[in-house]
Amino acid sequence: MAARSWRYGLSRNLFLLGFVSLLTDVSSEMLFPLIPFFVLALGGTVLVVGAIEGAADSMSSLVKVFAGHASDRAGRQKSYVVAGYGLSAVTKYLYPIVPGWAAFFGVRLADRAGKGIRDPPRDVLIVKSTPADSVGKAFGFHRAMDTVGAILGPLIVLLLLPIFLLGRTDLAAYRLVFVVAAIPATLAFVVALLVREVVRAPHPRPFRVSLSSLPPRLRAFVLIAALYSFANISYVFLVLRAGDAAGTTAAIALYLLFNVVYAANATQAGGLSDRLGRLPVLLVGYGAFIATALVFALRSELVWLVIGFVLYGLSFALVEGVQRAVVADLAPAEVRGTALGTYHMAIGLTKLPSGLVAGALLVNFGFAGAFGFAAVGAMAALVGLAVLFARHGSGRKLPA
Image (cartoon, one colour):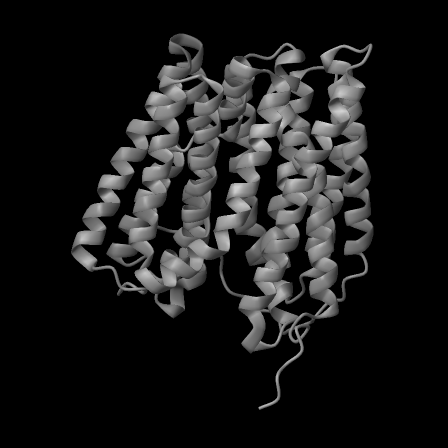
């Protein structure tokens, strides 16, 4: 058999969608490390910061469930992809002009709703635009493009922020960074318009999201994943910890380090779970987050902050994709869509209370209280995962 070109399976649509994701992540990741400092500068408190990011994460996760179902029913994905990127692009023009944290809250929710609208239909469009024997390669390529944007965004902030701070207040400098962030978001929307629709017959299936419809073992795993999600408090608390100890610039640099570590290990983590089994990889991932929380609860020296952000990146790499793979492994084919929808719904519902609890603990007990809560909750999830691991073995796929 003749060797295939490196471009085999990488369609026009895939290149366009990859470039769209790169540009969008440049824009979004210019905002993310500045969000907690921006909200505080607008008069918000750390409790407000936790509530905003918790609600934003919940919004994104919950909208994904409905958007994926709606695009399946329609048999078309492009309109949802374009609408999602368009909504997020519009919000980038609103961030620089919000008068206070309450307005920022609304804009943030709209931005993350855009992400929820676009992500599942975009993934379906990638599959529909790719030969069946190259789907894994296609998603790997798309993830790589996305990762480049995630690294470039904070790097651009590190270059621009010191310039914008000359002769300006912190708040004014943040607003200027947000103005620049609107440019790649707009370009992403324009490129998304060039994507071609791949029409398939609509699937008028009823919408179902229910724990009771899942097999018992899968139901137990979804509950464990939800507990871990509740304990895994938002990145904003790590950024605030770093900013409090080492300053805003150092916090942004450490956030960039997190993205680099995550990007460098995410693909390998998935392959490792194929070879060694999903649950052992997840156990190590949960353990890495527990170590992260303990570092941030107990230490504030720069060297320990570096270690903490490295561990945080490793925990994301080992957990994010592998948990979805476990759900797919445990779900019978006839309820796989319901299972993934239920998983995303369960994860999403934890984020707002997680942010509120962590924020309240930070206000009343400091960083030790917030990160102590995270460590204890993640430890409980790890114990639950270990029980599941002990009962059902370490095979790559677990029986449903």
